[in-house]
Length: 480
Image (cartoon, rainbow, N blue to C red; front, top):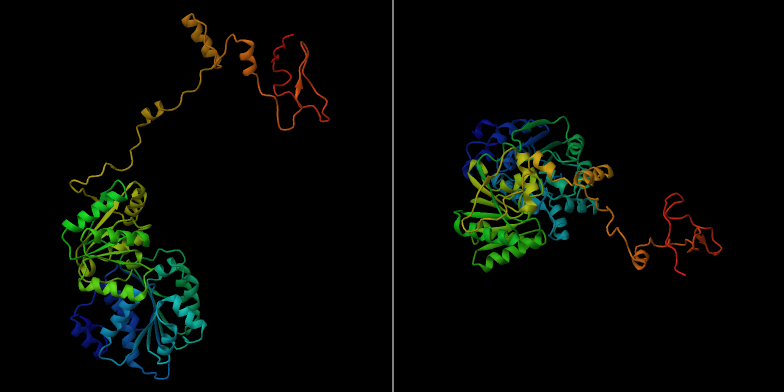
C-alpha cells in the first residue's frame, strides 16, 4: 500500500483520487531510498511505473521545504518531446493537491515564450537535452538550485548523440544534489562514464533484464518475400486480427509516410508519427490516437520510448529494429502494467540476421506463424550440406603431368595437349598465337633468320626477352 511508503498526505490523496492503491515493484523498492536522498541506478522494464517512482519522491521533498526565491529545484531530463509531455502529465496528476509548479522546455516551441516561463521559476523542470543546453548558453536559465536530477532513459539520450549535452548539464547543476537514473536497458556504450561522473555511490536496483522483460507478450514472426508482401501481410493482420489499438514500427520516416498512405487507401483508420512532423502535428496525431479516432499508428522509433497509451495490445515490426534494446522498447508499448499483448515481426531475407541477433539478446525465439493465402516462398537461410557432400563440390585440381602419362599408358592413346588449340598449325595461325610484343616503352624486336632477336637502335636500353634466355622458345622464321 502507498500509505506504507511514508509519503505526504497530499500525495496520498492524489493517488487515491487516481485509483492507485498498490505500488508496483519498482515503486516499492526505489521510493524509500529516494526519499532518503540516495542516488539510484534503476533498471526496470517499460510500463512498470518508473515515472511515478521518481516523481513522487520529488514532490514529497519539495513539499517539505519551501524556497520561494530559488529557481528550478528539480530537473527531469528525457530523450523525446512525447516522453516529456507524459512526465509533465504525471507531475500535474500526482501534484494536483499541492502548490508545486512544473513546466517543460522542449524543441519545437518558441524560445522567447520558454524564457518568459522560466522567469516564473517553476519548481520542477522537464526538458530535452538539446533545448536545455540552448537556454544554458543563452544564460536564460541557471541550475545552481537543482536538488534532484533525474536522467530518464539515459541510454536512449546517449544513442541520440546527447552525451556532450548531458555532460554540460550535469556540470551546470549544483554539486550537492541527488541523482536518479532510470532506464529499461543499461548496456549502452558511454553509460558507465555518465554513471561515474553524475552519480555518487549509487544504489543499484536491477529489477528486470532484457531476458525477463517480455514475459506477458506473445512474440510472433511471419516470413515475407519482399516489402510488397509485407504490405499485404500488414493489411491482412490489421483487418482480421482482434485488437483495440495497434502500433506499426518502421525504421525510416519516408516509409512511415508511404505506409500510412497505402493503408488509408485501403480504408483503414491510420495515423503517422515521426521526427520530421511539427510539434502541433505530433500532438494532434497522438491525441487522435489516444481518443480512438484511428486505431492504428505508424511510427518510427520516436514512439518506442515513453509512449504510454492505454489499450495498445498489438505491436507490428514492419521493419526489424536495429538492435535488441530497440526491440524491447518497441514491444514494450504493449503488455504494460502486467497486461497481455501481441508483438508480430515481419521478416524478409535481409531481416534474418537482425532477427537472429535479437533472439540471442532476449534469450528466446519468436514463434513462427503463417497467414493463409499469403505464405512466403522464403523459408529462411538454406542449411549447409554435410561435410561429405560439401567436400565433393570442391573444384578439382588439374591433373599433373605424371598422371596424364599414366592415363595414356593405361588407355593406349596419346593424351590430349593441355594447351588449348595445340597441334600442327599453319603459318598464319602461328602468327596469331605468337606472344605479344612487349609494350610500355620496351624496344621493338627485329628478328633475323636463324639468329637471335636484336633490338633496334632507339636510344633506350634493350629490354630483356619476355620469354627468358633459357625458355627454349624459338620464334618462327620469316619466309623469304
